Every structure is written in structure tokens, then in C-alpha cells.
Image (cartoon, rainbow, N blue to C red; front, side):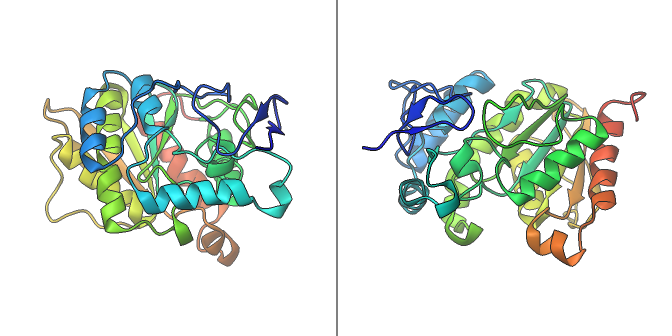
Length: 283
């Protein structure tokens, strides 16, 4: 076992990081119940009574053998440029406000991004674009997010991934997506009273949000809303409250390098979400 220093705190950790070892933001403990299959995920998700308890359970999940092997293999082998630091190597939880007005739904952690840093959208190029835009529109206190414990904080916003483990080639299987879904549905339910706008990154995020809110009891328009950049759809809760889904091209290098997604385009969608969620506080 080779322990390496955390880039922010300097504390030594193994890769993957054991629960309760002191990693910034780690909500799990050695005794946190572990999901080993889809039935366990459904049971533990349903049992979570608050977001922190849910996140603790998410962060130790081992329900998908292929994803566990991949995320831990990456954490042990490491990319050469990060060879001197520990990798989180566990599922990446939702992160941000516990009572968000804006929710951002993405695909999954990057193998050398969130899987390394332990924070969603942190430590890779997609995250660089996303956090810079969030800062420009007033939803993040810093323009960068480099590692857990770096002082970054979201303002009235929260980020979640549809699939909580880094998948090979960024492509989870349908079975892995469905096994992970109860974590997302429960998180949507727990933060539901405050959310007014949901930004869906890419088609996968859009479809996951529609499935998740439908499972949480929301009315989804028919025909099913189609994804597109700046697309909008209004969903209605069982209690008659409405929220707006907004589509956004994923800030992947494929999209940003080719100009399919530009900074003004990203700012426009996130700014629209902020305006919907926090009326009277634009700019």
C-alpha cells in the first residue's frame, strides 16, 4: 500500500480512498451500509431520509461489478500526470446546496476527473467549462473547481450524475443505468421542494431527468419533450408545483473544441436557469 498526499490538505490516502478516512467532503464511515446489487440500491435509496445519508450510501455502492472494477483499476493505475496523488476511486455523490433552486444533471464522473478528485465535474476539461460558466452567472463562488477541499461552493445550486461511477469509454450499459437510477430518483425527491429549474447536460442527462421525475411522480408532457440546446419542458409535481427542464449541450471537449457549444451558449442556458429559479436576481 502506497499512501499519497491529497493535493489540497496534504493528508495521506490510499487509492481508492476508504470510507471515513478523512477525504474532504466524505460523508461515509466504515460502517455505512453497502449496496451489492440492484435490490440493495433500491432498498438503501428508499431508506435515506436526508441528502447526506443518501450521499454516504451512494459513495460506497458496489452494485455494478464492471463499474467497480473500472473505477478502482483507474484509481490504482493512475494517469501519469496524476501519479503523485491519491484517487478517490469510489462513486461520486451529488454536490452543492442541500436546498437548491437550480439542479444540474449530468452523465457520469470522468475516470481521471471526478473519479480522481471525489467531486462531480471537478478536475477535467468539461468541469473547467461548467464551473467557469456557473461563476459567470452567479451560481458558483469561484471560476475553477480543481479538487475537493479547494473552497469552491455552489450558490443555490446542486449537481448530480445520472450514473455515479466512472464508466469505461463514458458509456454505462442500460443495466448499469437502471441499477443506479434509484439513487437519482431519491435525490430528486429529497431536494424537490426547493428546485425550480433543472439543467440537463446532453441527451443522457435529459433522458435521465425525465425518467427520474416521472418515477418521482411528476407529470411529463406527451409527446415526450425532445432534447436540444436551450430546449425547455415544464414538469408538474404531484402537488401541482411546476419546474422547468432546460436542455444544454454537454461541455465535452468534442463539443467545445468544434464550436458546437460556446461560452455564450452555455452562459445563456445557465443564466436562464438562474433567472427562472431566482426571479428578480438576474445579473
